[in-house]
Structure formats: structure tokens, C-alpha cells
Length: 396
Ligand SMILES: Cc1ncc(COP(=O)(O)O)c(C=O)c1O
Image (cartoon, rainbow, N blue to C red):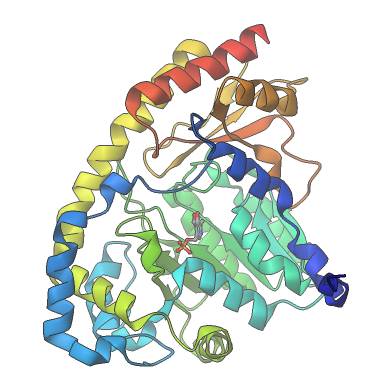
């Protein structure tokens, strides 16, 4: 008989159970399925045509050191090249102020590891990024949920939570949020910067999507308004390639960064040197800035097609976000909307989406919502899939 070593699992692994969402993504990837469920970039946006050239630059410039162990803080040429790049997000920092992470996800894990103890309050948007909940859950936090509207987190709700629940930190995705696609207005950013500064609270600003702006004006990062109170994170996953697993973090000045480095040392020693060298060469050579408009030009019509198709086919008692960038759109039905039923019927018609309730720290919320991804299907396929959803909502 095979031994069952799952009996050895620590009780904290119960908080890692995410099988429902994994099942959804597995089903969504079945052949023939139009998936509006995932959150992955379109492979057509990867710069396959110049990667050999970028790799040759890496070999010429750094040779074997691109394959060697390296600093936990990150490959120095990447941190140097990231200084001007981060200005795009209005984040001002010297190279030494930047830490490289194995994707933003690696940073979220390190944050959980060093900051969260059982029962600690952590303030998150309602809804929030599922992967952050997955990273934090094993450390046993008590989530307190910041109310949101179409302009993102509501500052008054945040301040109330800060006063009442004294969260260890606040976690926000202020720009083209995953899952809602919403963007915090500049006024709200300023108010939130003022609130966290007045209360001496740490904000984790997770910002993977800001560069994917298809229209409208750039909104500065909250980090630029309260640099001493914000741990800023962004990633190359959406603007270069997610398989590289390279993210950037700018912690507040002081010792917090040192602790993040200690936590990372125990996890992976450092992010892949080769991946970091590729990212460094990509940034230094100006390729990222050159390619970004092409990525945006690939996604913008998909967002428009999804919005138009929803306008045409969704009933008027549904509401949805109208983002100016990012990868997601969020839709909410009226009282009585049965999302599990819609989900099953949509699957039967080969259309997949993610029911919104998975993005809430409180599993009883979000029952009438869904997240739709528009980056990974062709225009006609997108229109047809949204039309199918509209038809199912109207006619059952
Ligand atoms: C809000 C947010 N944070 C972090 C991540 C993780 O990105 P990565 O680890 O690929 O950098 C994602 C990925 O979808 C995300 O949407």
C-alpha cells in the first residue's frame, strides 16, 4: 500500500486550498473553449523576433556571470536599468532602492512571510487579487475589506478600517485592478496617501498593469505621493514575458527591504540571473519602450470589442466596468442573478469566465459578479463569446 503522506501536512495548508479556481482554469483551457477566464498575456505580444538578439547581448556583456549565483537584492545592471523605467510609473528611486523579485507573486509571498502572524488584520479591496490572498493565507491573516466603487477603493472606508482594525498593512491594486479593471482616481490616491501618512500605515501598492494603458491620462503611483509609507511592486510579466518571472519592488526607505531580502534568501536565494540579464538588456536597449505601444495596440481593440459586445448583448440591468487599460473587465448582475447557473450554461456553450466570488476575502460576497479577460482571444471570438453570455443571461 502506498503511504499517504498528506497526513503530515500542517494545518496551515488548509488555508492553501484553492481547488475551485484551479478547476475553473483547467476547464477553461479545454480544447474548443473560449476562455475569458484566465489572466494571461497574449503570446503574440512576446518579442519572439528579437529574443535571440537580446540573448546575444546578454552573452556578450555578461558572459558566464549571467549564469552564476548572484545577489539576493537583484542583478545590478537590471536595478540600474530599472531606475529610468520606474519613472514611467512616477516612482523615483536610486538603483539600491530597488529589489528584484521572482515575479510580483514572489514579493507578495515574502511580504506574508515577514509581516503576517495568525489573526493579524490585513486590509484588502473588496474584491481583490486572488493571488495575494493565496500568498497571504498560509500565515493566517484576518482580512478586513475596503469597500470599493467604480473608482476603486473608497478612502473613507479605508480610514475607518485603519482606526477600528489597525491592519498590519493595506494591500491595493490601484491601476486597472485585477479583477475589477478599475483605477483609483488621482484625488483618491492623494487622499489615501494622506491617510496612510497620518496614521503611519504601510501600503503595499501592487502595480502590474499601469503600463497597459490604451487611452486616457497616466495616473501617478501612490508611491510618488507617500514614498516613506508605500512598498511599491511592478512586474515584467505583462510588458515583456511572464515566464521570465522577474518583478521589481521599491520598499520604503529603512529596514523593511532588508527583511524582504532575508525572506527571499530562504525561498530562492535570488531570481534567475539569466532572466534578470534578459530583462536588463531589454530595458537598456530601449526594446521595452519600443514594444509597449505594440502591446497596447494589440489589446486596445480587444477591450473595445468586449465593451461593444456587452453593450449590444447584456441586459440593461447589468453593470460593468469600462477600464482604459489592463486585462480585465468586471460585470455585476441584478438581485437574483445566479452566477453558478450561468457559469454551467456558459461552459456547455464553450465559454468560460471566473465567477467573481473567488476574488473576495469573504466568500459570501460577490455572488452576482464575474471577471472577464479580454487579452487572450481574437476579436471575433471575443465578440461571439460575449454574445453567448448575453444570450444566456437574457434567455437562460
Ligand atoms: C495584481 C497582480 N499582482 C501580481 C501578479 C503576479 O504577477 P507576476 O508574479 O507574474 O509578476 C498578478 C498576475 O496576474 C496580478 O494580477
